[in-house]
Length: 238
Image (cartoon, rainbow, N blue to C red; front, side, top):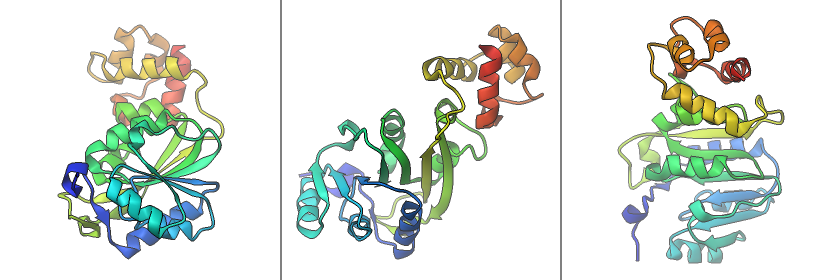
């Protein structure tokens, strides 16, 4: 049997954080898919919303207990391999910090869901929301999703207590994407982020995107652009 440490489990115990997650969920619609519900700290109150809840849990003991205690549909399995529904739904989860990036990559590529309310590591949440500079992953998906940090979650809100704070991160699918060609745009973003040159203008010029280079903000780096600026840069380079 796996224990909490082997599974990266940090169970949520803080009532204020649970309430904050529920307020974010209340802004969304549709059935709920919960990732890694653990001991049900979120599953139980989510069940009181009257919305259908599907919980995907890797720990067999937690899965069995959730079936006994809640009215949720509980799936025993790895949510990184879970096939998300194609109909509109909301994703909720207290994500193990060590698989946050893998979770986000899997989730962002999945169809169907319209909003996600996730507890992730504090610094990861800031990077996803572009606070202090965007990453390649964030820039690659910004035209399709709006990322926001809703609250900081202190380490003491979990048991066992992790070494860093968490955050409530929301991701909302844009009804009107800023870019149409996802594959082409994402190749472009990767080329810019990994390109050689001192600053964004030099990177674009060396890559042959002269019109985009002429427009690029002076002294900017790829991480400094907003979602709208990335979309415009793509249009100028196409």
